[in-house]
Image (cartoon, one colour):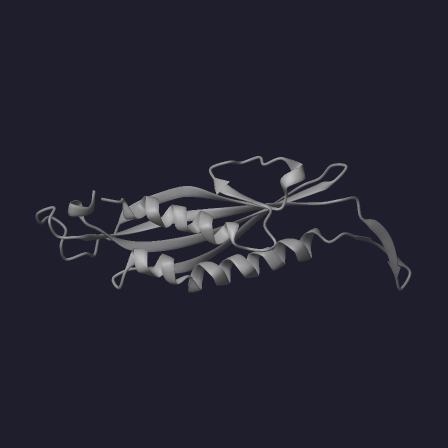
Length: 161
């Protein structure tokens, strides 16, 4: 038997790896090498049961819905930008923000529409995009990270464990 949770996480990695803007995809690797950026890493996140489920307190033969909240951390780097002058104002310009935004759009769309992912969580499950958190690490080259947060609901069946 295959654990659905593990199958869902592996499919998230496959989705990330299939994106043309991503150079490296994997799981639980926080600091990928600069030469392999942009990278997308899937992190486990938390998991909890749906406490409204009618099957709670019954035999383990009845599935419970579980909400897992994995996230995909995208790390990208922008080489030193340049200063452009617009209307007499100096503005620092690099392509990090637009690059991270393009990757975000591609990954969110891919996760929400992936048929294989949907076949794993099944008709009693779903996937939701829950939002994004960002981090910018300044230095000689600027590193940007965004965490794309998802909630995937799936049936936990003791017979599948």
